[in-house]
Image: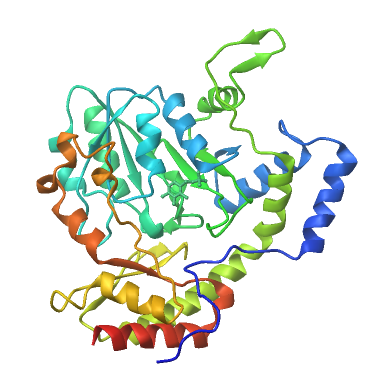
Length: 374
Ligand SMILES: *Cc1c(COP(=O)(O)O)cnc(C)c1O
């Protein structure tokens, strides 16, 4: 077996040319303005609004603070129905708002929240549903909205993986009350660290803007218990340099996805997780499920074998959030409530996936995976 000379990671941040970034930074120095909605911030907001087809957008210093603020802005309380199959930030944002997370099992194919299992979890305390478009695969947005409407619930989406995702030509953020995006360096579009909320209701704008700036209305009035969620000019100008590169990166990744899929096509032990028919793929991750042949050739074995070849895949998302010590005693965290999620967490593996990786490297990684499972 051929070992890669350099370690291959699951992703690599998109780096623009340094001189392009310096060009934008010169404007920042010229303005002598570093935060609080400066010129770069205003320009990035406009550029993203157009790029994402966003009715309203508010930029943040990271996605987690954005999600905390989204929950505050809708005045959620009590219980929120959510997924255990995500990054820790999704559930922690509820806990930091003193809300009890209620874990719902997953759709077997999409690995997003199963709409058929939501209603039995609704109680008189439920205030919202918080879904995650995991790997950019959209939740069952229409079914979820119908349930929410029937029960008077709000809908928030963690769209951290879904930058650029569309369903039947509709931008992903047009569904639900608020969608959160992360602009962390591991995300397709990034601002070094950063995030955003996108929402349809114009009336939310003012409240969100106050909440992300300590609740300050003017020099003499502080009207809400806000937080510091502001994106700086240094972040915004990096984002403005990265944004023009995103579509080319997505196209390269789409090509790599096709190479992986072709090689895995006829292998019954490897299932590719794909967003489905009329969906534009964000190309955030490339993930498969390893269907264990016996007890030995399983996901963990593949993960370890790849490591010996200098290929560093990731077990996204293992362990489930519901198994963290801080959540495992909740009733909804019981294994019997989450059979699909528990199985998925044992099988998923995200493989290296970024434009500059190239077709040859992807062919050999895929070839090695096939050799390992066969
Ligand atoms: C990256 C990520 C977050 C957190 O975003 P930050 O910008 O790092 O705070 C939240 N949820 C999911 C699903 C993520 O992948």
